[in-house]
Structure formats: structure tokens, C-alpha cells
Image (tube, rainbow, N blue to C red):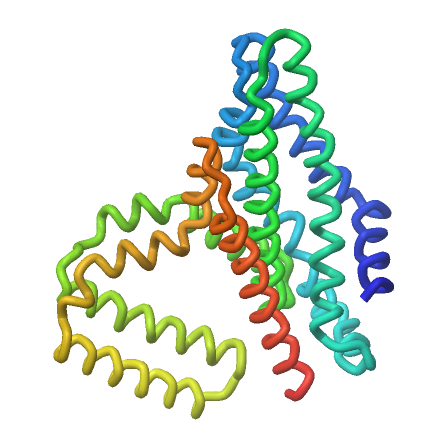
Length: 287
């Protein structure tokens, strides 16, 4: 794992990717810092992170698009698939390398509240709690981008899909607010979502029998649950979209609420998508 980590980290700084990411990251945060904290004379650094969170939509796809897609395109993934190193360690090594690049940028912006404190009182607890939440949010998006990159050999496709997925999580709350909340509509929406998940399963596993069986069984269970206890479906779409609204948890952090549940949530997102990435690569190994 350490060798993979070093190789990936080195590749970000022997090319322009790592430098471009850090530069754009610091420029965007720096503009907000100058406008809010220096010129606007505000002591709240969390406002900067809240308004600048859109940068993940742009920068994370650029940072993660090459992770597995490039390996597949150049056929160097065959070396990884036939190596004695467990797939999970390879994926974790790649994830940690990308996260290290991101961490370097976060360390630099961690100095900004200290700069602001030279001109007034700064709520350090909220400021650094927001920085930690911002880091966890970025790590979750990196895991998502890594998963998307593992499903294609085109860096452009990986970047576009990651962009759309991250953008979807940003607007998840707004989308949920436009959806109907009655149990019949919830049942229909869940039925469609289950079919989409089964299609994704097919793309990952390339096993049509398993995917069809999963679709049939899941739809039967869903239908039975709806007819036996329709009240369970009232408001369930909002609850589901709320769980997948990665950015919504960060909104709580901005308000000074960084508890263990928020940390567990982001760590769970990371582990979930790293696990899914491992399954995709394992399927490629045995194909």
C-alpha cells in the first residue's frame, strides 16, 4: 500500500494536476477570505467555507478522474490486478494519495483564522470545527470520484460523471423539496430507484442473471411492504435524500454543530465508496 501511495502522490507533483488543484483551491478560498475577513472585517471563517463549498463540484472531478481510468486506458491496471497486493490496499493507497494533496491545501487555509485573529476576536472553535468538517466533506467527495473513475477508462467521462454526481448531492435538498410526499408517489419513486440500482449493479458486476434476480426480488419486497404497511412510505423520500445530501451535514457544521454523528456519517460515505470501488476492481480481476 505504501508503494502505491508514494507512486500516486509523486504522480500528482511530477505533473501539473496537484499544483493546479492546490493553486485553484487557494485562489478561490483566498478571494473569499479577502472579501469576507479582510475587507468585510468579519471574524467568521466558517462563512468562507460555506460559500466556497461549490469548489468541490469543479476541482474534485479534476483531481480524481485519472485515478483508475488512466490505469484502464493504458492497460497498466493489469499489473495491479495480477499483483499479490490485495485490491483493498491498492484502492486505499490511491485514496490516501489524493487526500494528501487535498490535506496540503487544507493545512495552508488553516492559517487563515490565525491571520484574522491579529485584527480581532475569532471564534476558533467554530472556525477549526468548520475546517475539519470541510476536510471530511472533501474526503467523501474524493471517495465518490474514485469510485466513478473505477467504472470507466475515459478520464473525460469520469470527470463529467463525478461532476454530475457531486452537483446532484449539492442540490439534493432542493430536489427533495420538489418531490411529492404521499406514499403512492414514494412507492413509485423507490421502485424506479431500485431499478436504477440494479442497473448500476449490472454495470459493476456484468452479471445479467444476478442483476435481474436482484431487481425482481427487491421489487417484490417493495410492493409487499407498500400493500401491507403503506404508512411506512410517508415522507420516506425526504429521509432518503436527506441521508445522501452530503452537503447538508456540512451546513450543520457551519452552525457550530460538529458532533460524532457527523464525523461517522462522512467516514461511512468514504468507506462505502471505497468498498464499492474494490468490488468493481475485483470484478475486473475475475473477468
